[in-house]
Length: 440
Image (cartoon, rainbow, N blue to C red; front, side, top):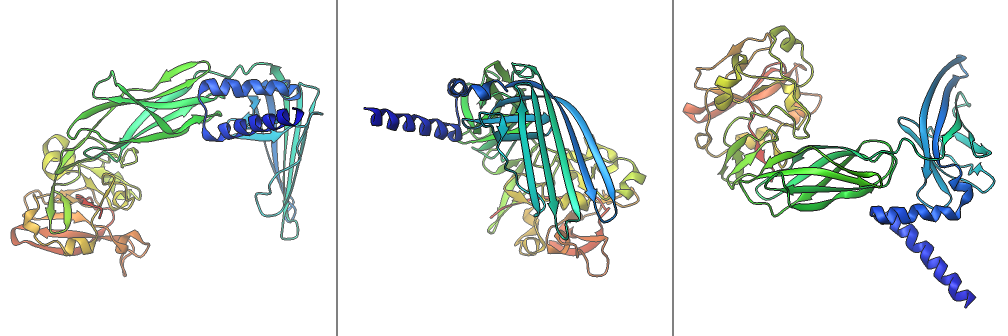
């Protein structure tokens, strides 16, 4: 009978460890937290602490010393398994360590610079913490890093615990029936379960768990989930939802629009017709997007002198007149924006020279006069029977954009009334339209 009880206890312990790694509901987490009552020497350290952290760097060759000191009201909460604690001691620093019954912190650490490392720590009673790290690395033990962490307990409860902080962010990868929903969640030191709600109105109706459905800590986690089976040509609302033991927080309402067959939608919600020419599927119009496909904003530059100095992504509208020219010309992007590889919708890309040159029928594309913006900030070409379009390829995606001019990149010069195109090189500070082609 004793042997049977021993085996049962082992099974219970194994199930507990497995549940930690598989992800837990809030009710599960409460059960797991209660198991720490078996470790009184652990429980007495949990709570809110005041920490002082000092970091030093010595270079023994030139006898330099630099130091950094910070203070922070942090917390100690249960670690990922029995006998472990997690110490949050500055905004971005945590330690998860095993603590022995005498208050000693297990002496294990990893050298970050391929040298020797040592760390040691202990609790003085239940209200003072001492922890030190020491790292020395070759050649000839030149460099030495040390850090000291001293903590003083303020409260037995984690007074920094709060309901989760959440925000819903842009959907990506939107197609006729598919989308990826995104959000940001800070669990505020408590086990937190993350789901998304979505539907065709702000009442939602459907719920799905995030890919990482249970999180713990004090930082912003990027959370996401993919959904399929959506109705083409439909607006959907969605938001992220986070639950911990102190309550539920809902993210802001966001929307996405699935595309109709024969169309594609960018991250701003602009819709474009698509056209198949041979084996290629092209966007039948110039991009109008003002955000990269990861949701980051592309800087709008209207000032001529600032446009000339750009060495980072930027875009503009012809004559700085969005209302008149957006629909026909689209936006003008500098080469730095094109080079990010993030202009086109997910599963689409800026065509390379081979894809342009193998285009079987240029006249099948809707090509309107587009012109561009020169490096000096002036605009040109609104009445020309031509269009300039950046293209991608090794010529500019590598550092050797052009053999004799490192400040140039390549564009396609479309003379659509003659069904012809020419490859030309221009300064990266030109602004030209972009159209996209679907990935194979």
